[in-house]
Length: 124
Image 1 (cartoon, rainbow, N blue to C red):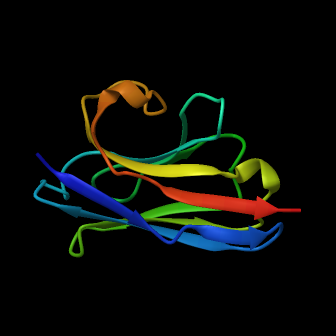
Image 2 (spheres, one colour):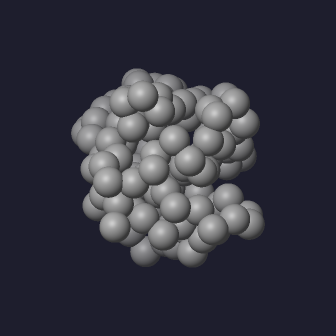
Image 3 (tube, helix red, strand yellow):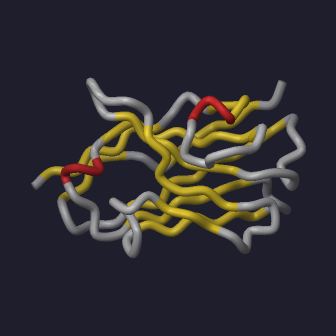
């Protein structure tokens, strides 16, 4: 079973940036779609961004388009989420996901491997 470990979360004021990283081990990282999800208290887990195996095709939730950028470095087995112009509504636990079984990228159930998450808190 593969393992994912997120880092880079923290507290930031609105308008500021954060960069999340997710390091993978014991999985074929270079294969398959990767994604970032987030979950705020009392809300469902939602897809934030996804990137294909080649790092060329990306999709984003409407709420983060133009502010967040997903990227990956297959040589380092790492996926990143650059978050700019953060808003209080972005406050959530952020998770990376791998092991996609296909289908709608924003559906959490298609991903088989998850990290434990990193907390992002944005204050106004």
